[in-house]
Each structure stands twice: as C-alpha cells, then as structure tokens.
Image (cartoon, rainbow, N blue to C red; front, side, top):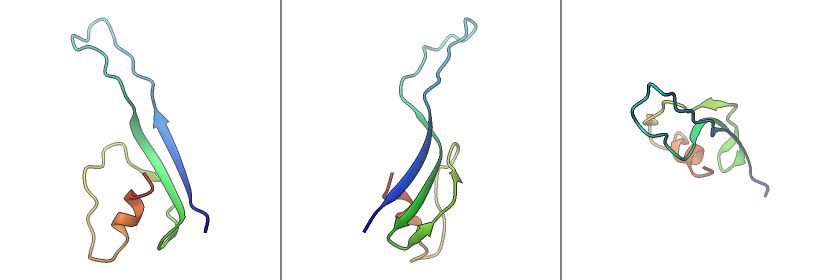
Length: 69
C-alpha cells in the first residue's frame, strides 16, 4: 500500500525593527493534503494555519487526517 501526503510549510519569518520580540524559529503548517491513507482516499487541500481542534462524531476520520503529519 502506498501512502501519500502533501504539505505547504511556511518558513519565512521576518522581524521588523518595530517588533520588540525576537524572531521565532520553526515553521507554520499552512495547509496539507492526505491521500491513500487508511479511510482517507483524498482529503483535498486542508487549510491548517489557525486550526486548534478537529471536531466530529466518532469514527469520522479525524485521526486519519492527523497521523500522516
């Protein structure tokens, strides 16, 4: 079985002179796509830049969207 995932990751972190906080290191996951993984045939592109929770009924596939990450 073949698993495919696609990611768009932003690593562009800029600090302006007016910003008193130091620049953060790391990345921000902007969007991702899961295909051919468990019950997910193709999720399409999912925007994830401000997601804090996935909500749904039991057995709806929430975990199958997170495990490939």
